[in-house]
Amino acid sequence: MTVENSPFLLGTRPAAWVPPDTAAVLRAHVAVLRGADAEDLLALPPVRDFLARGAHRPAEAAEFAKVLAGYDGGEDAAARLADFGQAAVEQQCQQWLSDPDASLRDKAFLISLAVFDRAPYVLAAELADKLFVHFQRLQHPEQPPEVPVFGLAAATRLDRARATGEVRAEETEWGPVPQFTAYFRKEGTARVLLTEVWTGHPSARPALVAWLRELARDGRPVVRTRAAAATALLARADLPSAVALLIDGWAVSKSFGPRVTAANALTLAQLLDAPAVLRLLTQWCTDTHWARRWTAIRAFGLLAPLRPGLAAPALSALAARARAGNSSPAEAGNLVESTALLLSVGVRRGEMLAELERLLHHDTAPVRALALGAFVRACDNAEEGALVEWYADTGMYEAGSARDLATLWRTALGDRAHTRRALDALQTWVHVAARRADVAQALELLLPALVVTADDHKRLRHELHTLRAPDGGPRPPVADRLLGLLAHAADPRPTDPSRS
Image (tube, rainbow, N blue to C red; front, side, top):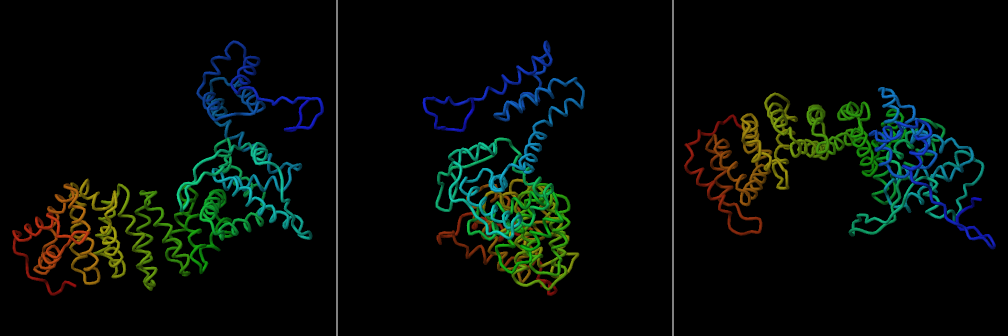
């Protein structure tokens, strides 16, 4: 006789049922189905992968045994074995959502857990009830929604959802805090479940959309971030609908928060290889609505350190927006910031330098300003892996990169609109050189290329002479060495009156 947990039965002592080991169930079924060669089948790599994915229900192990027993060494049979885990997850998610006996509240909890997979359980439970309210309003609009104050224990709810909970340290603005975290036992369940509810049950979309919009307005950053991540998964499954129902509404908002959510969702969708996201961002960079442009520009800035391979199309899209003109000061600043990030990370910085140098001489004045502003912004960064370190490690040994960087430095220093910021960036490089010998050597080799006219010489000499340490102390010894190099440099040419 099987009963619920902790039954009240007079004179009876219940025994907790412990499921048999998955490997034992699998071995027993395969031995019956295949006999002598069972051990050879159990040694196959897909079997090891299946067992390594954690605990499986006996019924699932028995189902896998049937697939394994049908293995004949062919490619199709091998593919069925390899895909069994994914197919099982998809089948389970379909059963959960289509089960007529499961309550709306249970389904709301499953969907909420998919959004907050590996997040604190209390978030999944609390926000599941809000989704449950939306489902009730959708299915029974004539009735006021009701949410039970108390319900099943957390362990029971998680077990029914085939999920696990454990206490983990969650990072907060005040430091790590222990939280009871919940997650599905099968990897990929969250993604499959959200995809299934979005594409397989379109009648649920109004409630799901209203709920995600509510999450995007939540005061907790983790909730807003999870709303963006869930929307990215929906966009991967059906981009046009996700954009029309969620992302575009956030993108055109006058408020800062929703636009950030839209940019985050599109960034994550691109990282998930959702189709056509890059084309959408490129189009939005020159959209007539300023908020869509803002969203696309921010998304490109977020993508830059994560997908260096997108640097070229990102720069092309950002330059296209600058070329169109009429940018507000805030938008121009965002363009510069996002473009600077393309130079600040990745292994293709030499290509970015070459492209910025090309834009400098073969494009419009607004694009020239973008190129110089982004270059100076990227140079004025002393963090680990910044452009100055890349140049000392790699760039100075590449003839093309060294030439392009010197051209950009010289042009920025001589351009009245950028001179002051370029000199500040040069100070940053000198301060880095004070603590890194390789940067000092790179700067000593670069300096002669920056002195072409008498004005160049005078400007750099004054800046190095008045330079002070970051703490206000005397200038570092490396600045004296650079001054010595300037003093021994060949006499520069007189200033060209045509230089701006």
